[in-house]
Image 1 (cartoon, rainbow, N blue to C red):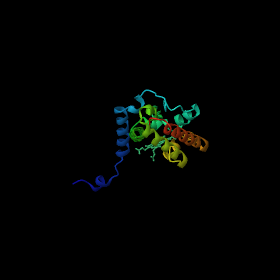
Image 2: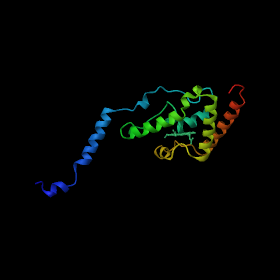
Image 3: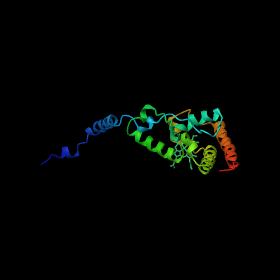
Image 4: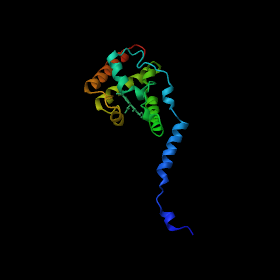
Length: 162
Ligand code: HEC
C-alpha cells in the first residue's frame, strides 16, 4: 500500500519542472523569427513628413511593420509566442513596410483606420503602452496621425486611377 502522506504531499518539484521547461524552450527556440526581417521604411510612396514617420516608428512599427524591435524578455518563450502572434496579426492586417504593395482601396481603408484609432485611442493596444512607457503617442501626436491620414485620403481619392 502507498502511504497516504505520499499521495497528498504537495508537488514541490512543480516550480522546478516549470523553470526547466522554460529554459529548455528558450534553448530550443532561442530567438523568434520576427527579428530576422531586414529593415524597411514605412509608408513608402506616401510622401509622409519626417515627424509623422518618427511617431509611427515609435508607436506602431513594432507590430505593423517588418521593423519589429523586441525587448529581451519577449525573445524567450512563452512571451515570444504571445508577441509573435500579436505581431503576425498586426502585420497581416496592415504592414506599413509594404505600403507600396497595397491597392488604393486598401490604402484608403487603412488611412481611415489610422485616423479612427488615433482619435479613439484604440491603438497601440493598452498592454503595449504599459510595457513600453513613452512609446505611446500623446494627444498632439494622435492629432498629427489623424490629420495626415485625412490629408492623404483626400489626395488618393483625387487621383485619376484609384
Ligand atoms: C502591440 C502591437 C501593436 C501596436 C504597437 C500597434 N498595433 Fe495596431 N493592431 C495590432 C493588432 C494585433 C491588430 C488587430 C489585427 C487583427 O484584428 O487581425 C491591430 C489593428 C489595427 C488597426 C485596425 C483596427 C480596427 O479596429 O480595424 C489599425 C488602424 C491599427 N492597428 C493602427 C495602429 C496604429 C496607428 C498604431 C500606432 C499608433 C498601432 N496600430 C500600434 C497590434 C498593434
